[in-house]
Every structure is written in C-alpha cells, then in structure tokens.
Amino acid sequence: RLINDQHNFGAVTQFYWGGITGFAYAQAGTNHQANVRLDVDGLPGALIAANQPSPAVSATLGGGNFGFYVTPQLMPGRHIVDVWLIESVTDNPILLHAGAIVVPS
Image (cartoon, rainbow, N blue to C red; front, side, top):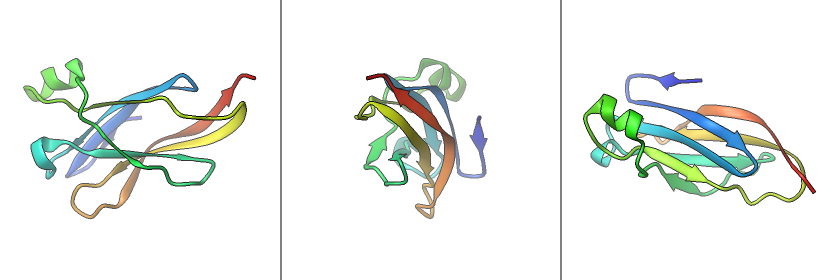
C-alpha cells in the first residue's frame, strides 16, 4: 500500500516479526525526512526517523535517505501492529500498514 498525498508519501515493504521496513518522505520535513510510529496492540510507540538508505526511493527522488527498519520487541503470540507515517505539517498520523504479526514461541 503506497500512501501519497500533497505533503508525504511512504510504504511498508517488509512486515513480519523479524523486521518491519519501508520508506517515508515528507515534503515539508528537514531534508524531506519523515518519522514513522509503530503501534502494537493499540499502544502508541516511539517515533522512528525514516533516515536510512533506501536506494530505489533515493534514485527516484534524486538522493536522500528515506528508509526505516525496526525489529519489533514482541512476546510470542499474535499482535496487531499499525505503522503510521507522521504527517510533517500537522503531526497527524497517516496509516501506512496495519496487520497481524504472529511471533513463534
């Protein structure tokens, strides 16, 4: 699912218990970098800077680091995980991806 609006765009490219990756771009952000937030089982998580190398996105935009990678710290079992791009102008969250992750025991 690719999110694209007037100010931001992004997507989640990998989504499983071993890692969540993707990219986020903020037109109004410093160096166009955005933040993402990982909510687990309805609890908001900390902001994660999308400032890692993302070669395909950088090639499209002519440079910059817009990738993110996080290994969720989850107990064994099923968890509902939402990945949000934090809108760079209003700080409103924009849903990038929602789904269940099952962590093996």
